[in-house]
Image 1 (cartoon, rainbow, N blue to C red):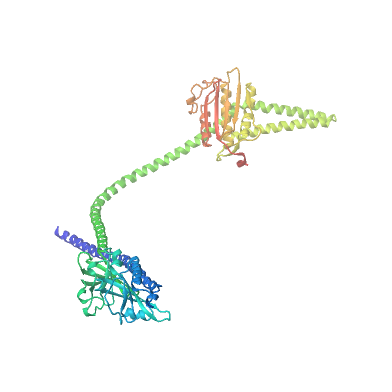
Image 2: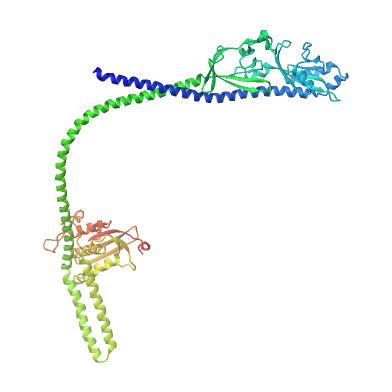
Amino acid sequence: MGRFLRPRLLVIAGFLAAVTAFAGGVWWYGYVAALAQLEQRARSDLALASDSLTGELRRFRELAVLTADHPHLRPLMAGVMAEDDLRAVLQEVADKTGALDIMLVGVDGKPLLATADAPNIDHAGRGYFERAMDGALGFHHLYSEAYGRRAFVFAAPVFSRAGPVEAVLMVYADVEGVEASWRGARPAVFFTDAQGIIFLSNRSELVFRARLTDPASAAVVPVDRVAPFVRYTEEIVSGHEVWHVDGGRYLPRRALHLTLDLPVVDMTGEVLVDVAPARQLAFLQAVMTAAVCLAFGLLLFVATQRRRTLAALNVRLERRVHDRTAELSELNADLRREVAERTAAEAQLQKAQDDLVQAGKLAALGQMSAGISHELNQPLTAIRSFAENAQGFLERGKPEVAANNLGRISELARRMGRIIRNLRAFARQEDEPPKDVDIVAVIDAALEIVGPRAAQDQIAIVWDRPVGPMIVRGGEVRLQQVILNLVSNGMDAMEDSADKVLTIGLDHAGARTTVSVRDTGPGIAEPEKIFDPFYSTKAVGAAEGMGLGLSISYGLVQSFGGAIRGRNHPSGGAVFMVELDRVVQEAAA
């Protein structure tokens, strides 16, 4: 058993190693993708903080420029206006704008007046002052011991009427007021100056921390206030700069570091974004991938085990199938023989049914032969008489009377031809599919065949014949046989009736055309059996027949897609109705 267990353990170990490596790759890919998205958001946050800073400083820069053009400055410089009056005006401007201090400095760098009573500091030689003396706007940031806080300084030149700069107006902006709106927000954002000192930030513990090699180079901040930067190690992850920071509870331990140059304020914006969400997302993706792979491996292992079991069962099943196939082959051969025998029997049955239908038609012709012979003898006798008379009239020189007799002979000959044509059509077998047929012409042909018998038996036929044709779906000969069977059955039923009336109706109003044949006989004793084969209501010996006429008619009407029904009429006698599919006259044309 150990010989078979060892390969399986090796396969499982290899599969677990592959899953671990694949999950590690998914983690790395997800981590890098998350860092890319994190960098986009961090750049947006840093740009927003930078725009907020520059927007606040722009307000004080414009204040310095506008105040330098204040109309009260010139009277002071000319010695016309008192300093206290100008100081009151500047104090009002500082209070309304939130400026830390507004100071007027002479060309020698000495303060002339200030709103906050700042100490007398010589500004000569400083970059922002010299720039203002050159006629441009000066800017500087510093930590002021006098104010005890960080400040931004805007120096605007005050021009004399002659043109040269006669004073410098300086506006001090409080840094804490600028950064108050975004202090404590996420992520950690700080701005460093050219000396590498963090001058303002939304994390107070980062202010005045510097990445300096020589602290003495910190000119804008006293050396005793500068602290070393937090400890960190830098790591490059697929082009992204990630810091491992040891900076307390308010800074992320792992952070994405981004920078943005701000030449307007001569600083560099920096941001530290926590990468823990990115690592967590990558970890979840790796765990899900490993879970899916392990689940797939488990299913594969179970499927393999099941496949082996099924293979063993398949061998046993194939043996049983082989034995069973031999038995089924023998049964199949027997079934083929039985099917062939049944097919032959059905063919014989169909031929017998066709022969039976034909025999029924010939039997009906035999029953009507006496009346038909009488119907043909009358025209023949009249033809002979008219022919002899025409010969006599010609001998007497009366050709117009002879022509009249010849016309009657022609009409009688057409009548005999029509009778013979209907008999010939009725006697032939029809095997064509259903087509468009004029039901009025079919009824006329059937009535012409039974006309001699009706005259002989004194049966009145009521047939309200329509003026035009009515087209239905069926077979001309088969429909004629159905109508003839119904009419003949009606005549047979009225053999002992005192009032012999056969009524034929035709309803062509709905979607189907209905042909009704009603007699005045005794009615139907068992209406539910009238279409059963060999069922007949005629007395034994009363007439020749096998009880197949209605059964045959039922099958013929069904083959057209129609329906045939029979019932007793409330006024006496029986009525049979044949429903056939109607064909619209325009479509038929």
